[in-house]
Length: 206
Image (cartoon, rainbow, N blue to C red; front, side, top):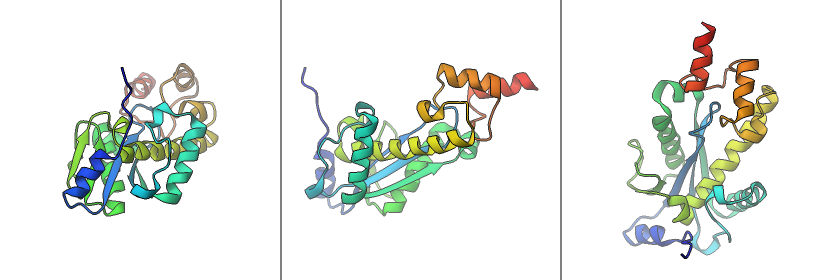
């Protein structure tokens, strides 16, 4: 079975249809119990595509950092967030779409290639939802890298403000250590209260 690698086919098709600014969009941070959900939109220059772009999950942290730095040099990149308050008031899917909408709008795109099976309803331009898009489209792969690196850095900062939860290593995901810290140290202001493990602890305290 040959592994399909991401290419520029979707972007070329959109450009051929008359789009001038085609961006790839991806988000990271739906699963964590705390912190914002983060999205990136990336417009690649076809003549300056960094070698080795792939789904961020398939890359080492060092490789992601290096590619993110390179993308900041050679591509147009916008990163946006939806806050913990927005996640709790809207729901995580809508909040992740809101972050995507903000990133796309920041680049003034006229066509968006979006990772997933749904187009965010508030997109500022037409788009195409691509399931497993980060493994198929180079622009989406680039966006997945920039979103992941940005959010991981943010969680390292938050880990210093709220020590003991291990966010510098677990990025806020519900690891054993994080769940144990929630029980022992309690809920922080940046925990998502609508998420079950957090909600249950708050409910037990009442």
